Figure: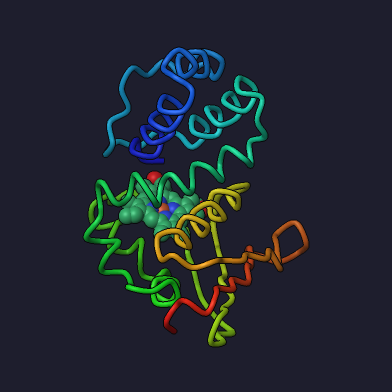
Length: 186
Ligand code: HEM
């Protein structure tokens, strides 16, 4: 994954647990990188290794770390670096979700080697839709869940996410029903 992802993991850990914790996590993961360059690609195994080491070092489940990271990503990292892109992707949660299938296409213009997730939406009702998440990577559903919770905060609506289909259960992708409170204009 691009270095900006690892950098964001580093920032999150340092801000909540301090720099010495981050140094221990890197050592445990066997990652000998002083500085992650945002626009350089690093092996996915490095990111997974950092999350596993953070889980062991901080005594938190990996899923909880990924979820916290998803919220942090969409509420802190993305607005600071890519605010205009976020703003133009929708003024309400449902608009934003309907635009998700195209979102990473614009990001791929900045990061040409991006291996983005692929999204589709279906089954729209006034206060829910079904989001289909396709990825070559495994185990990042809690990251997506954190992003969706963060989007609820961004748009100030209560969001409920139900994981209704998965690769583990024989599908070729992950499926979530997302329901939002009436506060969101449809
Ligand atoms: C401006 C905001 C965003 C930026 C700059 C961004 C950028 C990225 C980057 C660089 C990666 C790593 C992929 C790679 O390096 O090959 C990634 C992965 C991912 N992004 Fe985004 N993203 C943004 C917003 C979002 C949003 C709003 C969602 C979903 C609601 C999302 C969902 C994901 C997921 C699930 C992955 C994991 C990759 C996978 O499943 O294969 N991202 N994104």
